[in-house]
Length: 302
Image (cartoon, rainbow, N blue to C red; front, side, top):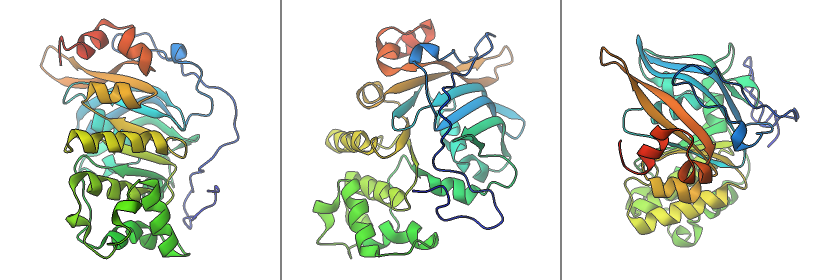
């Protein structure tokens, strides 16, 4: 997909690719509860996302504080941590879904291929087309399987053979063989796991660059969960994936890197989400640097 794919008139169009090959390893202030430096995770060349001093608010309430992360392309990055620590809030800020919440705002920079997604002139609709999202609960539209897959493509004015688009997207979502003979049936007639794969097919039909997944398996049985996990690993070759999960085993199985978020509780009881540690998944789960990370992973808190 080229950088000028589906340009938005009179708006800055975010590039899908970048030719800047300089490795960037963000340096992070050493203040208490700041995100850990990520040098130990290996240099991330050309990150798909680079977050610098990101703070996320709901009105005057600071929900997530001081996030500094570089997220690599064509890897699976997991966000883990206890309930209420801001994992989903951080995920939703990456494609400006956070904007849809009244009073929500973001300070700092969320750079996508070097462009701040909250910068002046950036079209949030274009951001969300390039950075797709799959939600916690499967949410197929009350339409046919065929119309579910083509919905976003039609809205975005994608031209070409829609039959080929449907087959290609369903194959990528590992669903084609199960539904190819019933494309005109309702997407709601599918099982929960099939519905989630249909939602993934719908997301990738518009040719995004990144797929965000907010606990995509929490409503699924173990067999359906494993199918989604296998699918994520297959999609990693074509897409960069960021996933929020409460399932420690899932994070360990599917992700390449993991960020652990926790809560900083002030004396007045105000709770703010922070990134405690970010590293290669193997290191997070076997040799965590911060005691809070180890305590959470081993079940001593959270």
